[in-house]
Structure formats: C-alpha cells, structure tokens
Amino acid sequence: MIPSKIARALETLVPIRQPVFLWGPPGVGKSQVVAQTAAALGFDLIDIRAVLLDPVDLRGLPQINGDGRTHWRPPAFLPTGGRGMLFLDELNAAPPLVQAACYQLILDRALGEYRLPDGWSVLAAGNRDQDRAVTHRMPSALANRFVHLEFEPHLEDWVDWACHAGIRPEVIAFLRFRPALLHDFDPMAASRSFPTPRSWEFVSAMIGATPDADVEPDLLRGAVGDGAALEFSGFLKMWRELPDTDMVLAAPDTAPAPADPAVAYAICEALGRKACPEAMPALARYAARLPVEFGVLLMRDAVRHDREAAHTEAFAAWARDNAEVLL
Image (cartoon, rainbow, N blue to C red; front, side, top):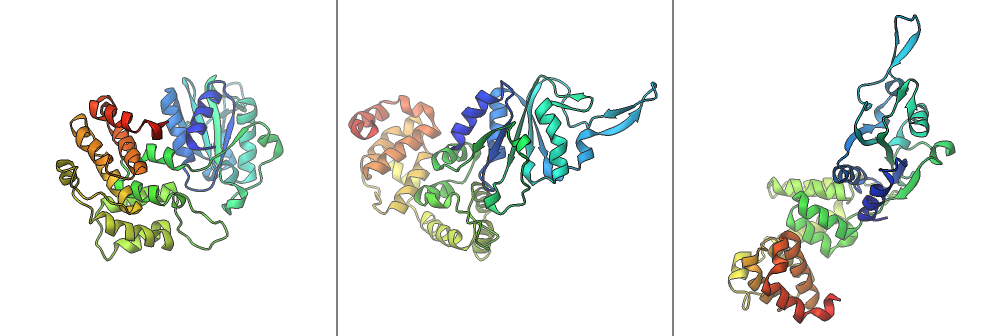
C-alpha cells in the first residue's frame, strides 16, 4: 500500500484499537506515517524502539508493599491515561524474549498488573526478512493478532510530503525526472548507501548547508550511493544554470521554454514555488508554451504551493483551455 492509503487505513483501525503491523524496506517512512496519523487524529504518540529493550524494561521492577507481597512497578514510558498510539518500532528486530514480553501487551492490553488505558492502540513496524535487515521470525500467535499492511514508496505521496517538509526543490525536481531513484534498494548488493526517501532527506539537508564543491560529490555518494549520486550531481549542474525565475515571470512570453525533460522538470519545480495570485497570469502564459504534460505539472505545483492560485481567473482560463488533458 502507498503511504496515503496506509494513513487512511490507520485512521480506520486505530480508533477501534485494532493492532497493526507495518512491513516495509528500510527508509521508506513507516514511522513518519505513524506520527502523521497520530497528529491527524489528535492522539498522543509513544514511540518505543523494541530492539533497544530488555525483557525487564517492559515488565518493570518488583516492589514489596505493606502487604508483604511483590508488586511490579511499570516503566514510566507506558501510558496511564488519555488516548494515543503506542508504537513498537522494529519489533521483529528485537530478541525473541523481548517479543515475548510484548505478547501480553498486544494480546491482552496488559503487562502483569499494568493495564493499557482504553484510549490507546498498539501499532508495530519492522523490516521484511528479504531486506536482509536484522530480524527474528515473529511467532504465529503474535502475528495472528495484527492486521498486516505492506508499505511501498510512492512518488506523488512523497512529493506532497516533501513540499510541506521543506525538502529542497532541486531534490524534488530530480526525483520527478528519475522516479525510480526515490527508493532503489537491492538487498543483495553490498553497497552501504542507497536511495530511499530517508536518504534523500539527508541530501536535501546537505545541499541546504552549501558544502564545498569538492566535498559535495562525496557527501552525495555517502547518502544515496554512487550511481544515484552521479546522476544527481549532473542534474544539480543543470539546475544551477537555470534561468532566473523572476526573469521568467517578468517575460513569460519570451523566456526560454525548455524541451529537454530534465530541464523542464527543474524549471517547473522552481517556478511552482513562486506561485501566488499575482503571479498566476505569468505562470499560465508560460505553462501554455511548455509541452502539455509540463504545463499541467507547473500549474499543479502552483496550486500545491498556494491554494489561492486555483481561484484566480488566470488559472480558470488555463484550465478551460486544457480541459481535455485534465479529465
């Protein structure tokens, strides 16, 4: 399932307290979707890295009360009220004894004397066995308690997130041009670095830090691997030679209208970020000069960055002229 569908599924399953397990390769954004869903529902989120726990960490410590009997004191990270999502990340990477300690919490919503409050749901996530990550086989009794959802990357979902998360426009434009590189993980390869949504976020942060030109290629290779870094470096060179966006908006009828797909993706991404009601007449005129698929991309980006742009006469006129490709 793509991330947007995963989010909608969680919005159904979490309120009815159905335990869910998200499966997916490394770096695709499983934990981010959980966090976004918690925020959308107005729920608290407790993120527990199961792989870092010992069995006693969940059960807590014994204490002898005045009745002379041993009582268990649960850990402070377990909730005692309210409503929220208890997220056991990397659960199947945890040792079998830790997984066993989670059984009662997931199956019975309890751990010894501790009871999970009624307003809380249990979710978990982990990598698949074929990803060659550190995993332990999940016992069938535990697996049968979950609804299992398979997570897969999706470019448009990622672009929607990236535009609101401050990801650099050159990274977004490149991945639109080369969508196969959003997530290119081969579990049989020996490379330590490979392209994932997570590693492209690293790339965006590094580019924003304006590294020295002689260091930049090594940083890119260290984040996304040799092949993707080489392609992105070539794209960056082209990006940095693009016409100034203000110049394009000042002269939309005469500014260069690229035919090369890589350049077109780049200029559309850069111009889309300039969107506002005042800029829409110029953007619409420039979009009309581009190949039709790039004109649609530019106007879609303009509306994504400024919703008010969709209510302008310039956008309405462009939409009427391109109604056949918008259906």
